[in-house]
Length: 384
Image (cartoon, rainbow, N blue to C red; front, top):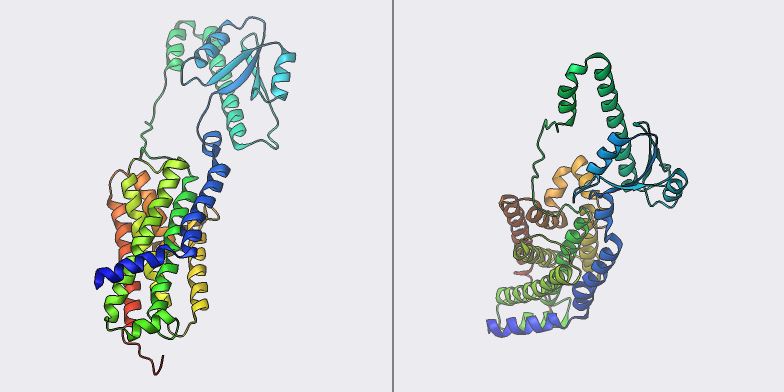
């Protein structure tokens, strides 16, 4: 009887139109919009790229040319250098094919860059790099010229000191994960799909209450124990929700090529546990007898949207803002917990923080399930 009920609960949920719309089509549409909107933003605004500059030489500038050639070679070149006359250089700058013009006049270097107004953050970074290079070059040149004038015997030592790369600290990456901050939107999309499973959980409670649905009235008259009926309904909904979560994550990872990192199986696990949390919350809300079916549906949908908003689905840095003023809220916000579990997989090598998030989701799921069981197990009706 248990397996029979489980089979038909699964089939009933898989045929629901709302399931197809919200748990399958919605993540496809929203995920595609995210991919189109955010594609390339990280590479153009954060990842360093070679800075194109034009060089206009007047007089003898052999040393400067050697410096520029050394900085324009190799895979990690700082500059992409174009040697030209002033007219051609200004045209390149106007067409934004270069980020600045370096004027070398008898080894003294000056700079012309585009106006800062209306430029992107990447252009601002390139201007800063060019400006810093010119200042450092002119400062070093002044030191060398001063040494030649006053202490020529120390010239070799000074040049050696200036040529040496001083490393006061070492850049050690804390993680090998993907640093693209736009990933948070996809993390929160997975969290939203998981919490939308609350509609399935709501259906469990509605279908077990005789005063809310015809199926509930039949179940109340059935010889099958209510606890068995609820458990089979819960397992059926969790199975359907897990299938939808797997589909959503697979679509994001393999079709849209969203980089979830090297621990994709754990991403599926986190999404599945988040789905259990969503179903259990819907079950708890649906078990509150004083609310009608429509009111319960409104509460679950509003709860999902509010949680996702504060987690950063609509505004990317909202979670950081919440962390500043109410850090405790991120610890109990289901959407934030789910998205944080995916974040931990990407940025941390061990599973300590990820395990904590999974345990938090499981504890919240158990609490919601117990609330639902407590509110529905002894409910009786005068008539059906």
